[in-house]
Image 1 (cartoon, rainbow, N blue to C red):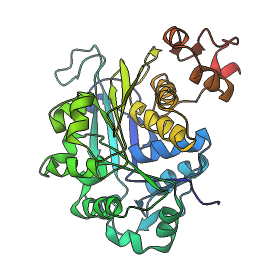
Image 2: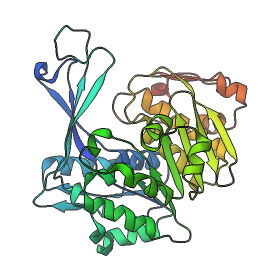
Image 3: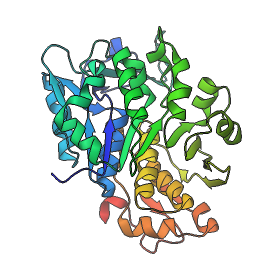
Image 4: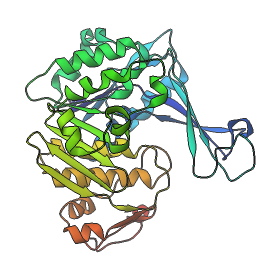
Length: 350
């Protein structure tokens, strides 16, 4: 496989999705799939046309083989994924609330992820990875290295690896870092390490709500003052807008699209992939943010972590839309309706 333009590094897990809503004790069967922030970004980057590799560790088990096989099927280079003979592949189980009366029910519209990843193969990642020829070659040849705060929470060795990668600044390589705040993962660990990690990256992506939790503010200007070193901060304000703040303080804001949400999981990862793909292509900030919104909309209107992306021609037209045309665009599970698109047939019919 050709050298990857982008490398995403972090844990991915086997996922069990319930066949019905309600407390886990009432669920009898589950559907097996995969999930993980960095691997979600890798799959979407590959779908957009950026040659991408994913680096991690998996167990010598069926979950690990399924995981690497699915990523490879999405066009992601998995040649530097290590197989750990002792540790298992991480796992999480999703619980979905229902309108039922069970005392343990989460309630309609709510969900919870139950993680079984302590001691996983990926938690054993550490600076020794940089001595692995396959991983070192991919990282050395990449234009983009994508990391996230999830890895910092997994183990001391994972945190040491992130610090080593962020300290290895090379000309021609952009390091992006998505905060990806997961409070459950930080129980018993010191989350005060996160600001320094964020400030060591070139591009930082974070939600306003998670920034508030970790850094004490979700305001883009205030975050810029707290994190002065990155070339760009991208602050996502839920379903309202995304704002990019440059090192000079120059701000570009693009409103989010109107989306009929099916499932929120994976939208942040999809946004990151769209933004980073546009960055690698040298697009301006407005188009970078718009491609992030388009990719997020695809994830929001599908079950699971990822959704089918719009046709390339539709994407190009939407990136060039006027502010009024962009504001009038609507996205749901059947497709996109916008003044800039003459063909509004559902996505699956194209």
